[in-house]
Image (cartoon, rainbow, N blue to C red; front, side, top):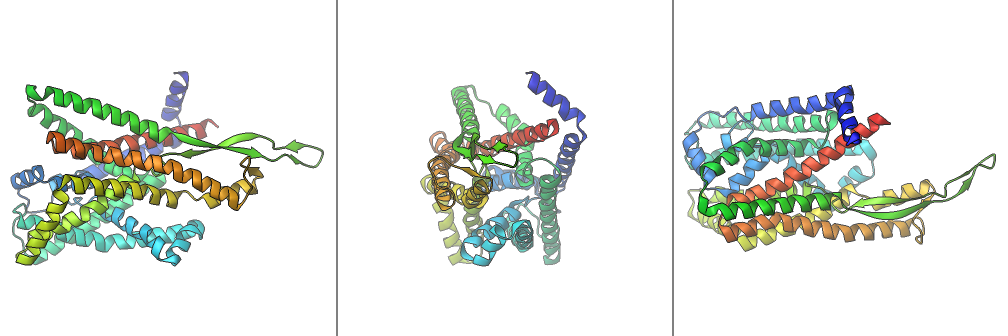
Length: 424
C-alpha cells in the first residue's frame, strides 16, 4: 500500500510523467471531437437501424473508435493504417529487401519501413472510404449526392484517417503506451455508457440468469487475460567470472531471462479482425451491386461467413497464426543470444552462440503455443456463446473486452516503468 501511495505521489508531482499523461488525454479529446463531426447527408434513423442489424459494421465500429456509429469524418479510424502495417509485415516474408530493412538496418531501417506503411495507408484509406460511402448510399443511409461531392467526402475521410494515424504515433512517441491500441481502446470505452443504457432499457427479468452468466464469464475472461499476460517463463542466466586489473573479480552472478507467454499482446486480435473483415466488406459491396453475377457471388461470401462454425474456426486460426507471426517479428532470439554472449552471460548447460539461439527459440515457440491457443479460445468464446444464446452484441463485446483488458494492462506496466525510472 505504501508503495502504491508513493508511486501515486510521484505520478502527480513528476512533470515528465504528468506531461506524458496530459499529452495522451489531450490527443484523445481531439480524437473524440473528430468522431463527433458527421459527413454531410446522413440519415440518422436509417443509420441506427442499419448498424443494429449488421454485426460486420459493429466490428468495423470497434476499429473506427466509434466514428462509424455516427458516420463521422473519422469513420475509418486507424483501420487503414493497421491494414497497411499487416501488408508490410507480411511482405517481409516474401521480399528479402524489406526483411533486411526491418531487421538488419537498425533504427534508420525501421523508420524507412514505417514510412512505407504510412504511404500505403493513403490508397487503402481512399479505397475503403469510397467503398463504404458507396455501399451506405445504396443502403439508403446516405442521401444521393453528386460524384464531385462523393470524391470530396472521400478526400476528407482519407485525410482524417491519416491525421488519426499521426495522432496514434504522437501518443506512442510523446505519451505512454501504443497509440493505435489506445485509440481503439478509447472508442470502445466511449461507447460503454450507451451500451449499458441500452441493456438497462431492454432489461427483461426473464433474462436475469443470462445477464448474470455473461457477467461471470466476463470476470473469468478478465482473470484469464491478466493471468496469461503477466505469466513469464524464466530462463536461468549465469554471468562468467572475470578477473580485472588489480585482482578484482566480477561476474559469477546468476539471474534469469523472463520470456512472456503473451509476447504479442493484443495485436493478433487486431490483425485477425482486420483480415477477417476484408472478405465480408467485399461481399457486402458485391451483394449491393446491380449486376446479377456479382450479387450472387457477394451473397455467397456473406453466407459463408454468417456460418458461425466457419467464422469461428477462421477467426481462431488467424489469431493463433498472427500470435506466432507478431512474436517472430518483435522477438529475435539471435539478438538475445548475441547480447548474452557479448556480456559474458550464458544459459547453464547450453553453449553460447547458435546453440543458445536454438534453445531460446524452442522455449519461445512452446510458450507462444500456449499464449496463441489461449488468445484464440478467448476470441472465439463469445461467438460460441452467441450461437448458444442468440445475443449478437456479446460477440462484439467479448472481442472489445479482450482489447480493453490487454490495453489497460499494458498501460499500467508502462506507467509503472516510467515511475520506476523516476525513482532511480
